[in-house]
Image (cartoon, rainbow, N blue to C red; front, top):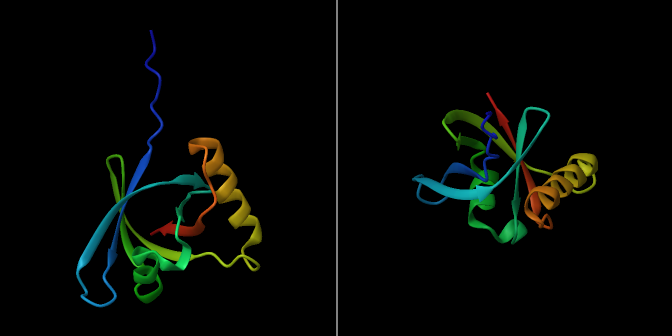
Length: 108
């Protein structure tokens, strides 16, 4: 009898606070595509973690037992249109929701 692999639901993202310089960790839904992670900001540029990434794009990521340093970037709706649509579609398939601002996380 084989055990079914459980799909991970959450990614833990640690950003650097743009005002305080302190580490700030959030738990957030994610999708993976072409060896990169994508997370969606429900409140777009109003999300504090998005503001932190814009100020300090170096982040720490934990997915399951994997821990890694990474570069995060907020996707541009026009320039990154294909990745934008793909991230939102994958999130809709995985979670039933995918309307937020996509942020790409590129592990080192």
